[in-house]
Length: 80
Image (cartoon, rainbow, N blue to C red; front, side):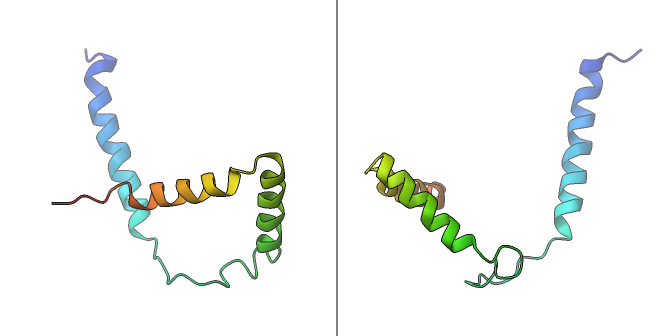
């Protein structure tokens, strides 16, 4: 009789394959400044308002957000 530890790697492989199959159908389109025009037309005003509120609460917030953005974008860059 197989224990749950014996079936865990198989279940993990199955989940990984299902995730890859699901992601395979996704298509990435080109980036566009008008991406949210239909689904969330006030996104830019909302983001601007939230960042201004964060700046008032903590003047370092915009710099921290900028640092976070570049850290996330360049974290996988290596000098080989």
